[in-house]
Length: 383
Figure 1: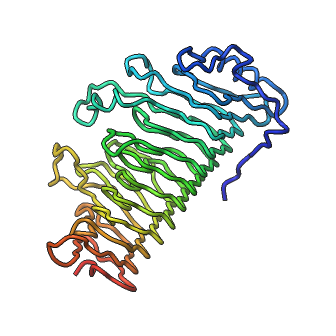
Figure 2: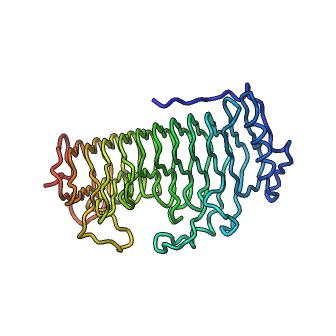
Figure 3: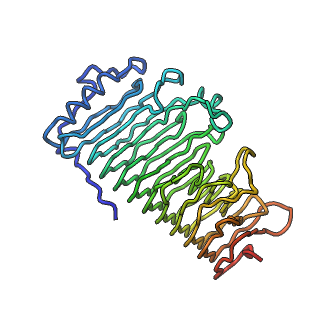
């Protein structure tokens, strides 16, 4: 159970950015006005809310930080907030950064528009290790007791949201949107965080709808609609030495529409030792998904890996259950465990996936694992 400190706006002292000189003309940077409003709200001894009212606003990169004296602090967005379209404006890897805050509520019917179209064409970090990192739209660092609800994130340059060292966080009723061809625009990425609940959310993007990095513990994902995008992914894991363990991941009652992948676990070959355990994907609907179920311990997207040197990330207590719908590829279930650290206690049950093409019957493939199979098996698993 996540402990979330919520506030009722009517009881909070409101700090309107317009009262601090912010203009809703879509071109005047409201950074100074927002920082002034934030600082006053943060220093308040009563519950406080920073308000960006209806209208269109231009906002450069800002860091909104605590600790705050206010017992709870809200950030309410009712207008459209636009980032600079030119990526070179950013000297850091975040557009709006919240950090060192307890009891933050980010809410409202407004939109954070990352204006990422110019950035997507120059995002070559996957191929170029010396690339400049593009800014993440909303960064959340070292937060506790956080609620994010109702807002929209549009066309981020890089990830839409990133959680680092965050605990007791609830994300609900938000909308994340970028076209399928937008590079590296993960909807929500997290690492070194725990007790996170994501629910009743729609994510359409050009990369993972939700990506789960090292150090993620006790994550619950429910009632998420994903598509387009690359699905919900645990990993990739094993890229670096001494990565933190991943455990307690539950993805249930979600729908994937026209995605590249559905539910996925991915680790790099030739990786140092690591652990990921107690992961369940259950009650999942697939609609025209290319790889509905995929566990890939030879993840190598750019063919620069030594696949003969196996991944040493140990996967255990994994369950794929009650997954149904349609696959756009004949090979609908892929379970490729590591020969160096074979999967343990992997369960597959009640899978009913139909191939929409004409190449033949739907198929599955398995390696380095003896799964526990039960219930319906379409396609038959590991036969």
